[in-house]
Length: 479
Image (cartoon, rainbow, N blue to C red; front, side, top):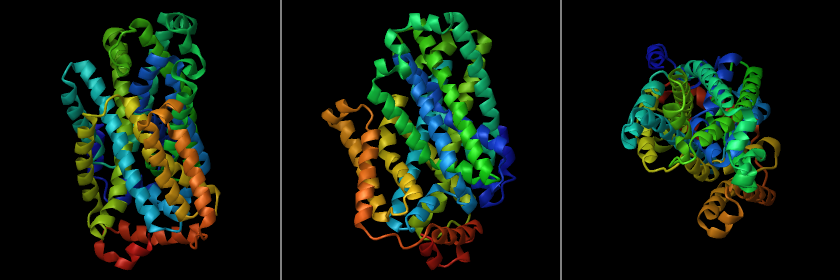
């Protein structure tokens, strides 16, 4: 992957090549890269740990991601025709390019990608720590450096083609691991006998709780709908149909993969039910239970999955920074967007590595930041797509209500006992706030098509990579 990154470094000349791969990616490449993006740290490290502690509940993690991916492709693939570069541009079209909503969304989406990048560094550091025995802090630093070296130089073209290869590797490796686990355990009946009875309930609800399972699926599904990385893949497709069916196909592959995660986690519990941390379940299997050839294949598969997801998160964060954050701060476009993106990603990797050093468990970190950063964004996207009466005032109400409710549910004891994952309550209250405030406020004056045309003019100025190619009115008008 490092070699591929160096290869593309000297061949990426245009901003569109670096950020959206020239908008010419075929169906098969997109399916592979979206699949690999879904199966990141949370799936290959956090979800087996959840299965280790709560049985089939571990399958809820990739199930939510796969479901959200398929739904996103079915609903939003039509936006490919507008040649957007970021999800922020799409949000602007739904709400009349209102600057408050657009900038609030841009900063939130940028921060969400930094959070996901932190998760990938945590997962890679966990794998490296188990395999090498080095100190956890040093492993996180090494993991951050390796990921930065792969994702920064070549841009999205490096990401998609290495991800396609990584998808094949990880599916092959985990397929062999699942076969070995079932063979050694006497099939699913053997696993059922070796684990607590609650583990075998539907999606582990008897062990993890109905509210927690439902909240996890909803949180992850909504996170995909509001995920700028998946949108970046759709915007990079050669055709609208390719964007739609690659997302749907990848979603079903990930949903099928969810069964593998449950089996692997319970297999680790069968062999050792006293691990100090559930996140160690799969790494422990690698080091203590698998034959050398299979252990090596699984390590490569885990690394492939984690780095693929990190690449996608990094590119989404970079595109948001150079397209929205940088112009907002300095009041002009970057004179050399590719250089600015690379430098911003280097800083982002340093910041995310520092955050990873203090983040705790992977699933715990994900369930804390997802409701705060992503629920409101998913609500305004769905409302803007389906309900033309939605206004920017309603969107702002939803964006304000969902993190407030999420934080309240996390830190006040009564709501936390009522629902372990606050996503459902936050999404419902945010949706209600959007509807009520929208009905009480005037209709949006600018249509989706009108704002999209304005965005196209602004984007053309940006892609010419010249600060003098547009006036300050263009910069303000496109918002």
